[in-house]
Length: 245
Image (cartoon, rainbow, N blue to C red; front, top):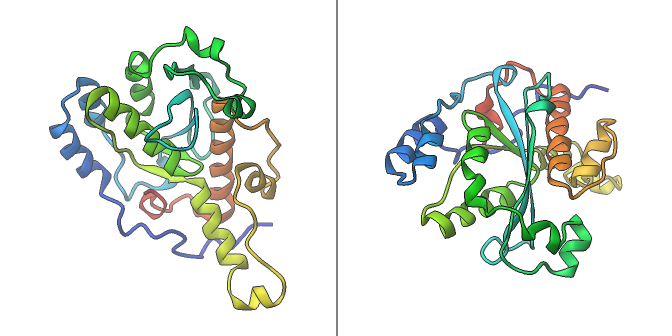
């Protein structure tokens, strides 16, 4: 059943920069030519309706959860808009973390030392990754991972980090759950916000279950989740500024 599309605002975006203006500043200050090119690509304005926004879902698998000490080992990305997912334009890379993999992480993502031993360093594929992100709004499920790992990885390799606009499907789902099931009365009735893990969130919209912890599959799952969230909770003419961060 369709949810009320008039509930506003879902997210607090007061601290979100005006991304086109911010990109201009970042481009002027960037030293690496790849970053300069990325920032110089035209970024959609905050008043662009969701129906006209080019998105790209992004997911990383990593050696652990600490961006200061762990490394990216795979990247998956899937371009899409609110109506169509462009699977033919999707991409997946395995990346060499230049360290042995812990058994605990191998069990989770299934990537082994032999898989990464001949894989390229992130720097060798950086131009391709940035070209795929350029001009698009990045969609993730829990922005802390992709933002902090990408920023840390580039600081290590280039001595400068990266900033990019994101739409976080986890944050959207958490806000929806809080709106529908949060508060004192719901607690009295034994109701509480549901899980916002990717698989559980997808289930609410009747989306199929995918095997988790593969960067490309998780990127696809995130893209489909945002499409469903928009279809249920937003008008297509809603400006992107209401959900970008």
